[in-house]
Amino acid sequence: MTTTFHLMRRYVVRPIAALVGRLDVTGRTNLPDQGGYVVACNHMGWVDPLWLGLAVDSDRVHYMAKRELFSPAPLGVLMRQCHVFPVDRQRPGPDTIKTAVRLLGAGQVVLVFPGGTRTAEAASFKRGAATIAAMAGVPVVPAQYSGPTTIKPAHLLKRPTVRIAFGAPILPDRRSGDDTRARIQAVTDRLEQSVAELAGV
Image (tube, rainbow, N blue to C red; front, side, top):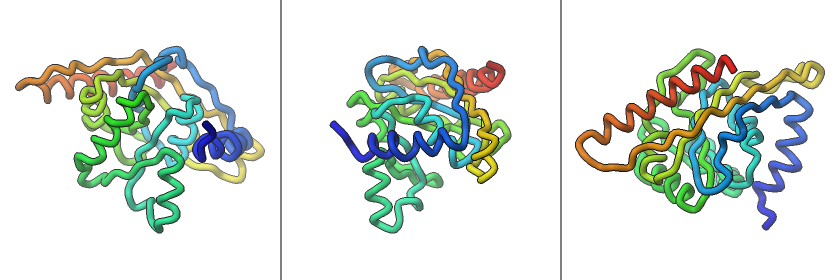
């Protein structure tokens, strides 16, 4: 089935990306062939999600984006058709988590930036990616982005290299109990460490 997302990815995002950069992907075999999974990546600029989606290379990819980007309404409709769903970054509510868990349960892929805000520096990961993966019972794949933080006219000539590395999947423990928070934090710490290690790949 041809969707708006498929058409945008194939005829808009991919051609533009090819003009302004060169994508170098390592560790793609770490992405599960079937079933839903979370990809947790560092966040440097507004172009990261576009390149990360191309690196995963699947029509199953879904993105989180701050809710302010969904106004005016026609833009919000287009974003939802392009597999983007809103999140309140200041106060992420249960609806956002439910949406992500539902998508994962349906075999989709959800891209998450656990560091939250865009920064070229290392940012401490929040527990959202590990929490969502644990609730859905799916693995979370660490990813490391290295490349431009935006698109500039000069990139048409220089075509800088964008490097994305995927690490081995981590499967969170779904058991409930008093230590649930600690186990989620442990997965988050493993993710953060893995992403940092991938920077040297």
